[in-house]
Structures are given as C-alpha cells and as structure tokens.
Length: 399
Image 1 (tube, rainbow, N blue to C red):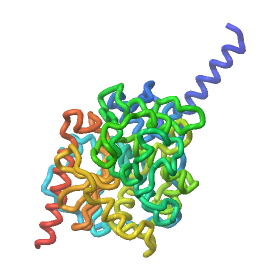
Image 2: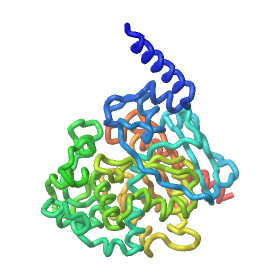
Image 3: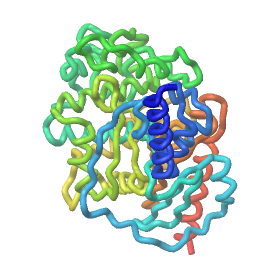
Image 4: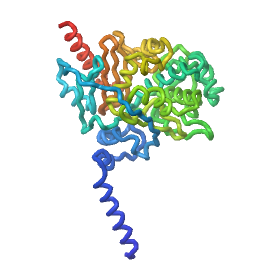
C-alpha cells in the first residue's frame, strides 16, 4: 500500500474519532440510526427516535430555514402540580412520549420528558405545522397581502391555472374541501402523501404546485372534505407568494420574535425552496406550548392583534365534518364538541387548547404507527388522557 494511501486512511480514522468525541448524544444516536430511505413513513422505530429530534441536521432529508426567536422569552412560571387521576408513567410509555407539558392559567402544571429527550431539544411537528400555516394566512389577511378568503387560489399561484384548483377558493383549501382527489394513506407507498414530496418538479415550478396541478377533481369545490397534506403545502406557497416573504421569516416577524419564543426553530424545505408547510417545524416543546398560549390569548402581541377580528372563532370552530367521529375541522385545526381544538401531527405530535379551562397541552412523541388510521388506538388514548386533565381541573374549580 502506498504511503499516501495509508496517511489518508489514518487521517480519516482520526477525523472520525474526533467527530465522535465532540458529537452530542443526539448526533451520535443519529449516526448510529441514520435511515437510507428519505420517506419517514417507512422508517423503523429507532430511526424515528433518532431523527425526530434532529430532522434539520440530516442533509439526506432536506434543507431547512431558521425561524428566529427574539430576546425576551414569554414567561412560563411554575404552578401548583396538577393532581391527575391517571397513571402518567404508563400513559407516556404506551405513547412513547418524548415530552408532555401542561400549561393552565399561564402556569406550568406538569412537565415531563421521555425517550432521552429534554426541554433544550427540538422535536419535529409533522402536521402540527398545518395550524401554524393557517395562522399565517390570517396574518396575511390582516396585513392586506390577501384580499379575501373567497379569492381563487390560482390568483396567487398562477401555475395552478387550468388545473382542478383553478376554481378552488382559499377558504376551501383551509377547510380541505377543494373536491380534488387525494390519498393520505400513510401505509401505502403509492399514496399521494407518500409520493408528492419526492416528485420531480416541472421546470420553474414549485414542487408541490407541480404535483398538485396534475390531480383531478372528484367533487365540486366546497362539497367534500378529504384530509390532504399537499393542500396545506399549497397554502404555504400562496402565503409566500402573497407576502413576498418566506414562511419562516413571516412566522418569525409576526409571532416567533414578538410573542417571545425562547429558541430559534427551523422549517424544512421542499426541493424547490419553499417550506414544507404541511409539516416539519422543529421547535422546543415549551415553544409549541407558547404558540398554544398565543392562540389561547386571541392572537395578540403586546395587546395588538396579529389576526383579523373573528379569525380565531372561525378557524377553531367546525367548518367541515370529517371521517373521524371525535373531530370536526376548522382552518387547519381539529375541533371538538366541547369547544376545545387541537393541532395534530402523525406519530404523536400535538397542541391541545381548551379555552374554557384556560388550558394548553403540548406533546411530542414517536408512536409505533403514524396514526389511528392504520388501526392503532394511540390517538384515542391520548384524547382520553386529555379528558382526564380537563376533569382534574374541573375538580379543582369545584373545591
């Protein structure tokens, strides 16, 4: 073997040893469990455990853009521990919970972490990001970038002209009632949700727009609800087009900095540079809870509204009936009969908001299956636990 070859091998070994010694525990876990498939729906549990806390550190998956935080974090003072009539340890183990944070009356009543995760870490959101994206539509409407929810989507995304989305309104996108056919089966490798992020975009066209404009209508706009992650990605393209700003910058400008998020967050990007707005915000669980408090407080920053009058009432009340018995659908929020509502993401991510009890619950995890649509019961189990939290607060109020 030539001397220079030996030298190169020695340098590589030394460099790898130095990297391993300097890497934090999350990066070591990531290296040991790095998936080769870019589609998260088909990873093994250890791979998801490793990557969900480090999605923006895996170049194989996607590039990301920073959502900058400000210098004055919104306070989360400690409150009295909540007396829960539940086996929380068993619940967290069954859910494979990474973080569970209960904030009531603006105070932390419960905070616990699992899966070797902690408050300093950032976990991915999956479809919890949908509720962030719809909130940015409200901000753009108030700022005058969007004229009306009755505007046609194609007026803001001209590349959709001539497609099934040509006569779909912004409101119909928000409520997922476009009437365009879509398959959101997380277990099917040939479903739209499994294929669209890997789509090769038409030249000069955003990747989501390129994929979505080839779909066909199955019902008149406004007449049929079908859950479609791709449509939230279209909403993100629309907001960026209308504002002339990236979603990350607009979220930082309108909420992340002024409301007082503690850490910078990140948002993964599609192959053509737009944020994947139906998914993939990486943030601390405490900052997810702060977003819940922003919504609970009426979308206000320092007493000034970020959203139009009446926006949150419409966004968080049922605008469409769904195929899920416990939930209706608002503007990218899941609604419940008692006035509570929720942002939900596959594999156990969520922000539960109950205005009646002044309650926010932020949770992150790694369920064995993506959702209850695959025959699991983790979502139903989580909702039952949230009901127990509500009951615990009611008992306090009755004393």
